Length: 239
Length: 296
Image (cartoon, rainbow over all chains, first blue to last red; front, side, top):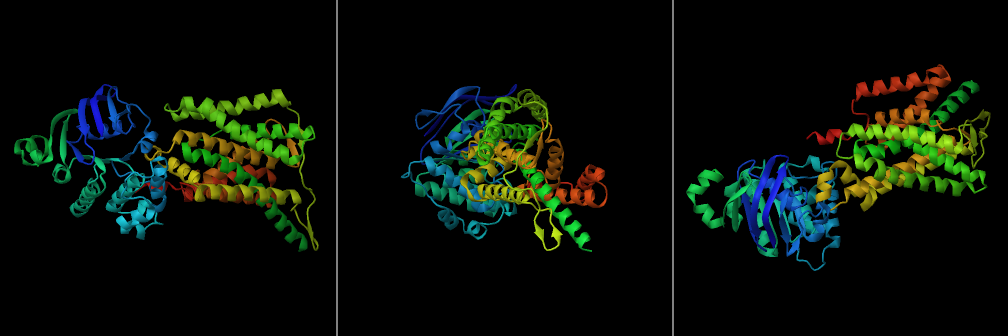
């Protein structure tokens, strides 16, 4: 589905990504793991077009999307949930969701999607339905994460980019959200590229894990192998 | 006794009419500020220029409403062109560069108007009467023209409210103003909306330019008082709130009129700044600022 070849992204003299090669298979969860500063967020921001790579190519379903503007990604079936949640705090829950639904307008109407209408979103996350008229800045961290995931799903993506969904959330909420991601992928064939510092939780739902260190891919393995590789876990994943 | 009542009523009516025009101009400033965090110092010059365009048509016997419509359309186009040609290339640098560019435009457009239209005073007609209504023994300072002014700004205010609250375009404009990056991720073409915001501000500014000119004289710097008062009103209202701009404008108009009617007309500017300082001391973000919501 997504193929990244020899991708390098630099911020001035700093190389955030250094010749990264990886593939994300359709209908699967690929977790990108690594410490703070390993280049995980830079990877997602480059894939979604927020940052231009200095070299390399990104292809989505065979189409070269390297350097395509971020505004066009929603129409190509890619939804990015940025780090720090990215709710628009001054808008209401419903307005945030309507912005997501707006992105579905140019998607094929038969694209499989678990969340097609605002009502679907409220059914998936009843807490959002209860607070639909509340300004998003009044939501708790977990509710915000649910809001941005619902908003991203409303755009009917085939590829969902998730940046640190567990950040700052209580373990119970993290478990709930990861469970939801696993169910969505299993039921609807959604593809997920998940960036996480919380490697243990990410590997519990991922099919494949890619470990980044200082902008380079150091390991690409099935999640099961990574879960059982004690030496690797100790050196890169911290658990 | 009747004289006292008449004076008070008329001072308030004058204040309301003046205030609503200030509000319209402040709205134009707020439209640009809330999406770009930039004060457009050229807003008044743009409005002056489109008012001259309207007057040129009126002098050639075009109907009033045609001239009015052309001025608004010109305001819209000029706003969009300035954003694309002058402002856009400066984006990404220091914000101060853009502010300085708008100051340059402020002077340049005034000079251009003086070259094209001359710098003499020219009278700008009103489509309605200028004689006050009479209620019993009271001679009101409310004229058909001032009712026209109030209604026009009312229509602009309601129109903008509907645009922002009820339409998809308005929702995306608010989203882009609050969080540009997230909006782009959601597929919103933020750069198009910035151009549209400047165009809309140009249109609203043109309305203010014509209303303040109606029934009086225009010359290349006739907007200057309104510019100063419009800035004060916008700041009082919180700079990023359209409702705040209207409240700030009306409040300022009333204070100005009360000071001019009961104290001394020479103190109006002083009173306007005093009001600004008092509001900022009590509520540093302005009366209707939304910035508190961001401090989570």
